[in-house]
Length: 441
Image 1 (cartoon, rainbow, N blue to C red):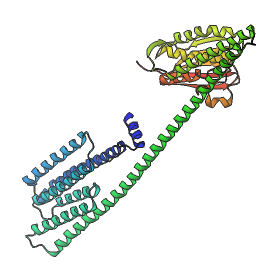
Image 2 (tube, rainbow, N blue to C red; image 1 turned 180 degrees about the horizontal axis):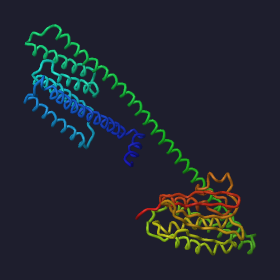
Image 3 (tube, rainbow, N blue to C red; image 1 turned 135 degrees about the vertical axis):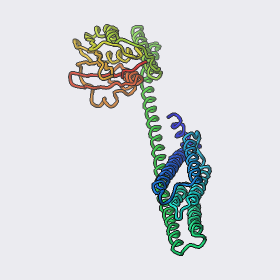
Image 4 (cartoon, helix red, strand yellow; image 1 turned 180 degrees about the vertical axis):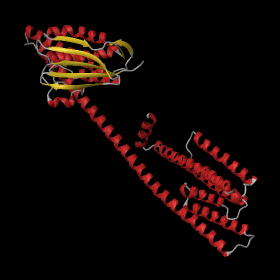
């Protein structure tokens, strides 16, 4: 997959890998076609020798030379199949044409030899002549090479008639042989035409796929650039505000006319904004440098209870109660510290959205091979206009939020192969679910 992406990137810069990909694709097609040729030839050989044995009362037993010829041809074609399967690098166009030419020549020689060794006039082994014609017409050989193949097969067919009839056959025998040659020509032209049409369609499809891949890559790049632009704009906006406040506060504090009490207030404002900017940069680094999970066995119930205990103090400050439950306690494989961080972010958001006396519920359950952590509060629903940007970095509906909590939590879930979703957004019930597929370390 990485190699394919490198190929596409190099293609857009005008480098060679696109040609290599096309060559590999044509080579795969050639190998499949060559395998079909060989299997068809083996099947034809088996069928013809079976027919011969079935009519041995008329044709007699195959001669020793014919049996040896078939045995040699069988071994040679099986060896070809093995060779094609074990090729490690693509064949060039020139090598493919050379292979096709050799296959055609060997096919003609085999068919002619089988007809001569059968010792039968008008031998059915002459049907083997059709195979090299099909190979020539369907391979990367030119139309001229295909017509030359037809001419060779036709000449040998007429020669067999002349030879078996003591060099003086009747005109009707030549007529029948000419009809066979005409059939050779029709087969060659039809196969060549059909293969040409298929190749044109394949090339057209290949071009369309390349164009589609290039268009998709451009869209992905544009989306990445747009996302980077939105992120950069958000960072600039979030940092500019506290920096502006700090700068103006320090400037006013340094003014001679500012009294001591006002100066202390301005210093407090500057300190508060500096801490807010520190929190922002800490969250940003946490989001940007999210490391791969360090998977370990962790108890589900212990995870839920730990997150409840850690957030209990903050909940008590605003008069909110946290209730934790675990339907089926057991072991899960995850990065416990990252999961703690993700769930704490969700609990803190739920606390901030809850009024005094409300309850925030944290639960865990394993369903159908998936561990589901749910955080529920009965505060107001999230505004409709905010739903599309809910997990976008730096987007927040809280006056003092950084907008990175949900983004960090979702990234942690996705790094574990799961996800974070808003599953319920009602007037008195907002529910987030963090899912992690069960796995083995």
